[in-house]
Amino acid sequence: MKRPDVVIVGAGSAGCVTARRCAELGLQTLLLDRKDRASIGDKVCGDEISKSHFDATGIDYPENSEVSIAISGADVYPPNMKNILRVRGWKEFDGWTVNRVEFGQRLLQEAINAGVHFIDRAHASEPILCDEQVIGLEYKSLASDEENRVSTKLIVDASGFSAVIRNKIDSELIEKAIDKSDIALCYREILNLKMPLAEPEVARVFLGGEIAPRGYGWIFPKGTQQINAGVGVTGGGRGSPKSLFDLFKETYPLLFGSSVVHGKGGAVPVRRPLKSLVANGVAFVGDSALQVNPIHGGGIGAGMRAGIILGEVAREAIAR
Image (cartoon, rainbow, N blue to C red; front, side, top):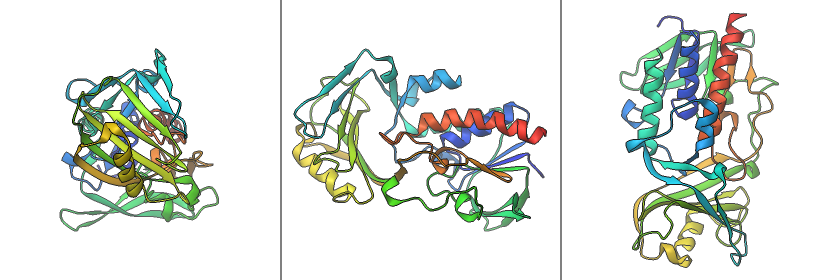
């Protein structure tokens, strides 16, 4: 692909959906990611997504190996932990916890099937600018160390919170510095429980308090005896996410005696999206655009919705 219409950096859920929509609308689309293909979708995440996002985008529901378990309710704990808001029968809560890799691989394959050209193990080095307009991208093959340049009509930064393109462009339209109070540092573990869950279809959310001062904690079932549990706290909060999560495990009975399958930390934006989602020759989507629910940090659904919209806007802009 010598000169694609669109180059998308990052093959997360937002990047894959954007790429697929661009290709469906007739745009020559190149999708890059620094991971190898088999690792696409592997990300520290709560793994839960609402059915409503699929209804809004027309993307097929997760099924078979993509689904860990269906979710149809939530127990919301206020900071004092003395009262519980039990949410049942509210369709907005219907959804799934997903196998993040299987789900990510499906979104990638759908993009490729739509005509997207995908290159893995590709590190986006620098946007190419001319007269303050982005006109291309320099990227490096991590497999061969070869440096590459590609010209394009539009670069999409879907690289996640690291925003590898956004942070290298100086423009009055582009926000680069994000206040630490607008960033949640998170730590989560996949845990096998000693006993089966009484309600494996119910998520648990813990608002602030000792568990997550200036943040929230979560327990999302991934099966009848496995959960995704974690803590996220904003900058300036008391304690590190890992230390707070360790305290959570020591004090919350459900977690007593659980065994760790996997644990890792990360960062997520928890504020309004960027004031401008575009600049000359470039657009931002997903975590790069801060398109995350600021209450709970969930971004899969928002990124998919934004990807559909961006694909359609890209076609209109390029047609002009």
